[in-house]
Image (cartoon, rainbow, N blue to C red; front, side):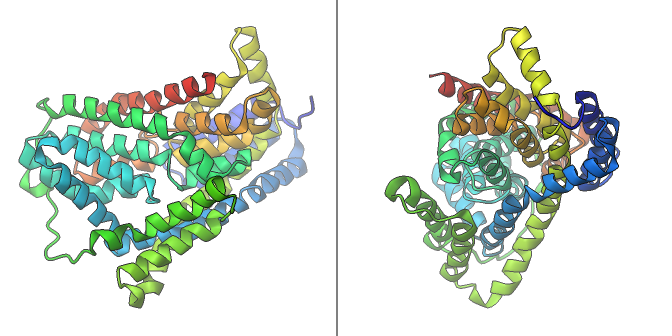
Length: 418
């Protein structure tokens, strides 16, 4: 058992990062400073601490590269109107009577095909708010439907959190996406149930000022809109189906380019790529900061002490996977940062204790959606702002969101045990 830093140091470093994030300090800087403090308090010395931080950040570069190229797909889906068209079609086909299910499924699919979860909610919000007002659904019910749908789609998407988890455990991205399909379906069902209950409560209706008037906005046809995502799915599926490995570094931008061409937006290719890059720069920088503190935690005695604690409590080692995802995502108020820190820190330990890498990655990933939307993170404010909801009302949704994330986590654990 070799380690460079103490458990106390690692925990104090993480605590410093959390406090700084809550105090609205830029998350990447908060994580870097937390890593520095944790390493120094943990007894590593300045040189060893900096070296470990740099090594941890360097370990994130493969994930960062894939995430940066995924911006082309995300940018194309948003800028060409493809994401909005997919959402609009789903809502129209399911109709007003199934408004909650329509909003949930639309957000789930938008997120699942490669749009970040917060952007998925923002994209679907105008359509969802309009249909919710017609159907007499409360604002809270409509927003919960979008958030729950986003959470369900997020664990089966080629998004940054999935890429980071697959990289840490060295498992195929497609396999990890498929592993959480059943947990995602259960999360979807629970979302519809909870959102339906909330929709009937008098928790604030949707006013005319809440609706977004887009004017005569030209959207592509449905087939053109889904062309890019379909290409990505086919390319990523070639490995499990035909043994042909197409790296996400290739598949995701190719899907983005297909989306641009299919929607006849090739004249705007450069601006679309720039827009996509602007959407992933933030999370890429966040991952670099995350890598520094993950490096300190990984090189500390924390993982060994946690395993010893679980053994003393007669709890199996696999419990560490969902628990780590839940706690780290809650600490950082970020699915991506939580999944990354948990996966980078505990992947070797979980594999050594006999937990299959794919199952461990799936449980961590699902666990990262339980309490990832706390107020010290951007997701909380972005989703509330998308529907003009007050902070007080937005806070009331947190227990419901946690229930949805916990559902997918429990199902992921059950699937592992079976």
